Length: 245
Ligand SMILES: C[S@@+](CC[C@H](N)C(=O)[O-])C[C@H]1O[C@@H](n2cnc3c(N)ncnc32)[C@H](O)[C@@H]1O
Figure 1: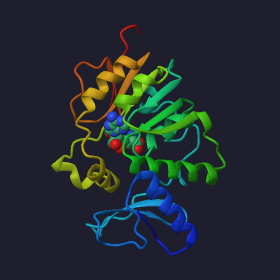
Figure 2 (figure 1 turned 30 degrees about the vertical axis):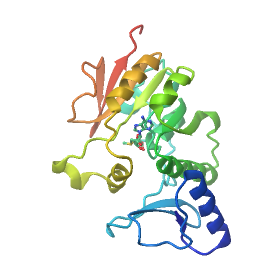
Figure 3 (figure 1 turned 60 degrees about the horizontal axis):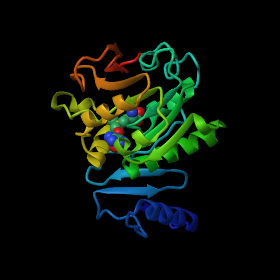
């Protein structure tokens, strides 16, 4: 963890985040590390210093399309349709950089977002804070972000109507060039979520109404026999209904 300049405020913010995340604090950025978390003037970003072609990863919602019927927030698109009409509360148990969590919150669901990588959670939190201040929107209880492992946290939460899972897709050689750079760096940081099947089992025991699992369009379901699936452009949403629904 480092700051991008010697500005005392930036240095202080970087030191505080390093303490919070238990990362070593570097008084100046150095190339002597693979991944570097950097406090810049207005955001925090992750840099992969092993590959100069990769730009920094940071969460930027400044161009987020807020139109209710636009491509991000329309309730007619697959992500919204996968949750059906009865769901009000959702736990996003694999929040990552919070792109889906923010969409769900702004669609009107009440979202608790859980992310187990403290660095990824910090990037998401930073992006969400800037979204709120830049766009003059208070997310409040519509989106609560928690750092921790959903396998441990889910059973202790008030039972949500639905749980959303988007575990890291396994790297596919054929398509690896098309995988967004953020996803490649993220995968390096957090690994391949090999415990996703276990997480799905826990989610199915906790969700009142359904579990929705986002998969690559050509990947097999995470567990056999989803009740139904909604297919988007490159992804598929597999829906597992709770036994009583
Ligand atoms: C593919 S990313 C999710 C991307 C996300 N849907 C978005 O819109 O940005 C998967 C994330 O799930 C997180 N994750 C996987 N298993 C988890 C668990 N058991 N608890 C919390 N987070 C988990 C990983 O650390 C990773 O950041």
